[in-house]
Image 1: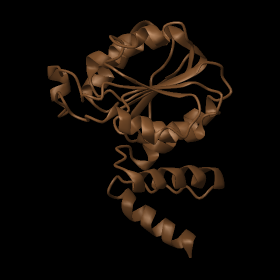
Image 2: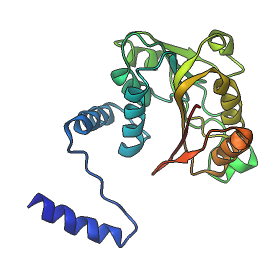
Image 3: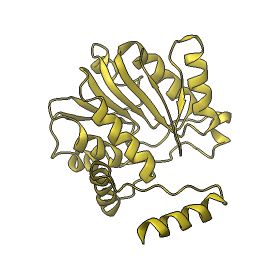
Image 4: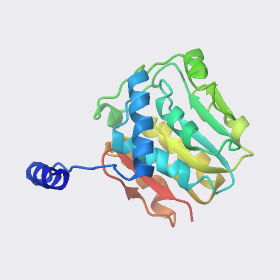
Length: 223
């Protein structure tokens, strides 16, 4: 019955250029259950597929040395998902301005982003993540603020969700040389002109290939 229903629904959606994805494997269901639980708690901006990618990449890079960092935390939902899936000993830096987005450029306005979007509360996010070990929540526009705390570290996994061209480019410049071999940098909003421009410019003379994922993400694996 399930297979027939899935097949019929999948065919119908395909005609609309929409795909149907199921997560019935036990290790996938566990992650989706985490995502759905977070979505009941607060407004999670990532789609299920975007969030699933974040969780799986966290797990996949757990075997590497180096810290984890997220730039652009908003209300802490994706940071909680990462915290649930990282090994306890890994340091995880959660960084956000907590003042909303900085000044946008013209290329960012094309995507509808504007200064002050996604403002959140520092103490609320700290409390939300307080149950997890080795998680540090820092305030400030990175890398202008807090870069001195990270400059001597290496990284296994970097999640960028900054929305804007210039800050994304600055973060790529900061983290690239500090990535462990096999480490991953992934960015949300990769479908927007600003984020694509930042990645294309930075990696134009690098050996890594840019991998566009379904939905709203793009990533690289450090050689």
